[in-house]
Each structure stands twice: as structure tokens, then as C-alpha cells.
Image (cartoon, rainbow, N blue to C red; front, side, top):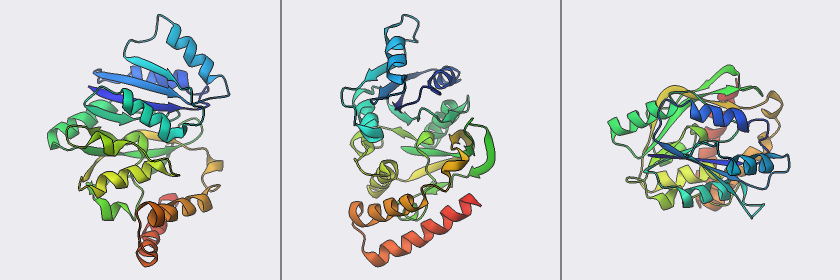
Amino acid sequence: MISIITPVFNALDFIDNTIAMVLRQTYSDWEWIIVEDGSTDGTREKLRELKDSKTLDSRIRIILTDDNDAGAAGARNIGLDNATGRYIAFLDADDVWMPDKLKHQIEFMEEKKIGFSFTSYEFGDDKAIGTGRVVRAPKTLDYRRALSRTVIFTTTTMFDTTIVDKKLIYMPHVASEDTATWWQILRSGIVAYGLDEILAIYRRPAKSLSSNKFLAIKRIWYLYRQVEGLGRIQSGAFFIGWALRATLRRI
């Protein structure tokens, strides 16, 4: 079984479509753990109504956190605490999966006998309509190669907990917690395998594409220096590779 984990914060505009999207998956052996994290836009009330209703699919579990500041990392970790499936898949509330996403990815993992996979994806606009800008998943990605490129998109990941220790999937409470998590898994010697199929859309409004470049630079540098403990020269070398690939991805 696949345990799908979704952190939810102020996602009222997306939650109905996201639920319908997961229910349309052609692979049906899943549980879905939705963790609400102190929304202020009516999402919490919406999810409470769904939780109390008798019409919600029995595979869906909704957790309303008492901690309103868990953040995405904390919410995903709560999901992991409650997950019972062999496989773990992350899905952010505003992103989109293709109907065959789970089916194709679990078949890929079972065929290759691998513990960590991710897929290609396409950038979408605020309506999740594809923009034609695609990030292709390489065949494999080890720790050193991952330090100089950010091609793993959270909503495309899947883990086999019989191969990857579940403890490694828990996310640290740092900025860019997802990238830090992939690195800690890969640092353990696990290799990530890419499925080069566009199975997800990353909803990203045009106005957000350039607004956080400086913040992204600060975050990646912090991860190199404070989380990975790399020296300045080594961090600089990886940073150059990261910056070049990030720039090309936006062209």
C-alpha cells in the first residue's frame, strides 16, 4: 500500500480538486493522510466538515493539528507518524498528479527494486495549466550529484520503506526542508532513480518565479554550510553548478 502524505495550509482554492484528483488515480491501493496546519482561509473548517461527514472515502484520513506552526516539514512528519503503507508518496495540496502517476511509479520501483524514485514534471501556471517548461528526471542521482542540482520535486517522490529507513524520510525543521531530506537519504548511500515521465505539474504563478531568487540562494548556501557541514570552497563549487542549472531551467 502507498501512504500519500499532504500538508495543507490555506489551500481552500485547491482542496476539492486535489481530492478529486487523488480519487481518479488508476492505482487504488493507497491511504491518504491530509495534515492541516493552522489555515486561516477556511481550509480547516472545510476539512473538519469532510472529516465529520459520512461521504468521505474511507482511505482518506484528515488530521487537524493542534500546533498551528508545524510548517510543511512538521505536517509531513505527522503524516509519517501515522502512515501504515510500505510506500510513502508526498503530494502538496496545490500540485497536480497525472491519473497514472501512482501506477506507473510503483511499477517502476517494483521492476527496478529500488527504494527512492522521482519523476519528471512540468511547471504550471496558477491554474495548473502546463507552461511547456519541463524538468526531466535523470536516470540516477547520488549524493554528490544532487548537491549541484535540484531536480527532485517533492510531489514526484516515492519511497519504499523496506529499503529506505523510514527515519531518513522525516524532514528537518530548516528552510528547503525537502532538499535537505533528499540529501540526508542520499548521504546514507541510497541512490535515487528518475522515471522520465511527466507525471506531475508544479503549480507556480508567474509572479512567483523571480520573487524569491535571493531567498533560494540564502537557503541553498545555508544547507551547504550548516546542514551538510561543507567548507566554503566545496560549497562554492557545488553552488556554481546549482546556479547554472537553476538558470538554465528558467530559460
